[in-house]
Length: 131
Image 1: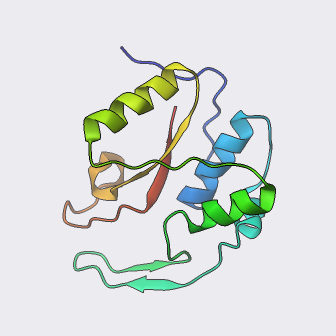
Image 2: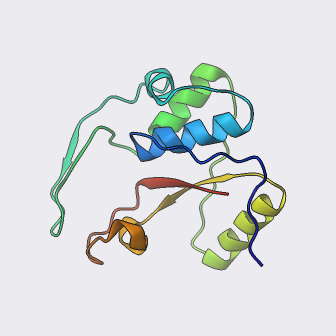
């Protein structure tokens, strides 16, 4: 059965992490721009990753670093969970969506068909929101 969270507003943006955060904040009634979230989270960095099938230049170096700094500066809690048990994570994610809670997740980009990436171009630092 398909479920979509009511009152969730998908938004376009400039960067996967800041737009995902913006969408979550917006859902809970806090309209913050991507630029503001990026600044509060001290997001500026530089990384070059020489992946065999798609070299990458990034403005961020560590997954969850911006989120952790952002939560510290705003005095809020961001709960991050990970597991090697995909079924457990899938069920927990479904429960959150059933409770009308959007879920911020990191995904491996070549498994998103709309990106049309080479299946060997793995990068798990891409953020999306499930709603």
